[in-house]
Image 1: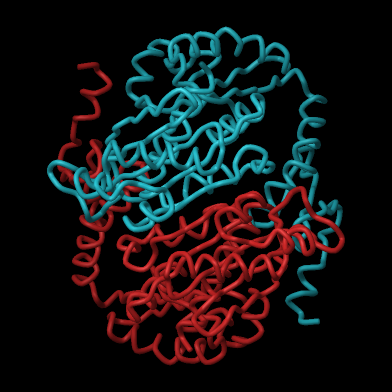
Image 2: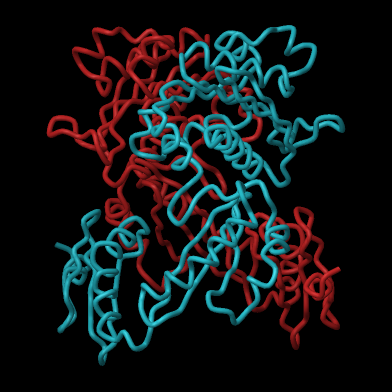
Length: 306
Length: 306
């Protein structure tokens, strides 16, 4: 064994080893003059798992022993389809500094997360402080709020489909498989998602999803009729309850005055009808694609909540 | 206008405004006693673009003015299919601390990036220091090295397909659209990728890609014959030069002693034959999926380089 590896296997005196269930590098727990200290490997997936299994329980125990110092609890609500400044305006004084709970927002890929942090003597009290603030945030933002804490748009949509015993099929052009990837990030998603198409060329749209050549030549691949046909035929071929069709211009090339980069049509086919939305997203390729895929899932969420 | 927004529009005396071409918040450039300082908004995509357009040119100019202090240049090689410790062993003394150039590695999703940093009086000298080290790293790692600097596996595979005027079609099960997403992250990928399927259920595999029901019942969805049929039929239906089929167990559920979580079969169909690889990836769902998608693109890369 090389000296490097021997060093990795040595444990500082007085430290406790934290087991790494996903990798080889162990973690360490130490007591530094009454303050608990934890040392974890840098690989995020290993670090997160070890935090969950070994660090958080120890921290809870430590904090319970000094309850007088109080606890901070937080609740996060996730919103989509509304801007951060619009949210700030709606929440108004709730977001003022120095309040308890304090409310703030972060934005990523068009998703705005509203975090409510409460400080109290114990967890129960903190939760009671959060409750009315959460209710008021929900009242102000309505159906823009799609989930809480660890939930994602895909996990929420998946949960709604599972509850109803329904399925969705996906036909993607500009998102190129990203919407299917987001849905299948969730374990068990095969219960409600089985059929997906990435029809990245016009010929593929016609050959696999029976999009009419006339629709393509007359309206273009990025158009309301093509989104509608993609959604309707994805639903029909798969036998799913819903079909989503996504076609747009992700950029950086391909934009015109009439059809700019960021223009996306999303079709949602159900037993009743086919609904198509025209959306224009800001930002570069990655952001347009992420927002388009999220908006498609959000459209289905709103349909399922009715 | 609210006082908050007025504050955002104010510029500290002596600062120069850096234009934000992707958003509304401007950046600032200042000279703090001879040291250039830059203030950019926190949204990564805006910050990166502004760095590229406005900060880097200013930094280069600043550094050119004080060439005596020297420059640091770096070159990064990306490798896949080989572990970090194996690379460390092959590179040996090249990775010792305190050398110039200094060589180190980082790992993410099975991709190991080897960074060569050289310090010299000017860029030309630094590049000349890097050259022989890069050549030796390439000699030691051979075809494991797939790209350099900003290149990704998808951009490299796409470049090779474009050079040859060839196309690939994708049939994905466990990766659920991720491989297609990676390919279409690259602008212009429609030149070589048009047809993708996400066959996340057995029925979809049979209905869309003509996978034989007997293959599914006799060998299971995660098997060599099913990966081969997915690849071959994706190629046949699309008329593409290559077909990739990916089927595996991403976890956390679905694993058995015989077929553990992380087991993935990748089929590559070409005009000559269908080649299937059996791989077992460590880690959790997200990592298994990312490695499986990358490994599929890598298999095609190695085929195209022959």
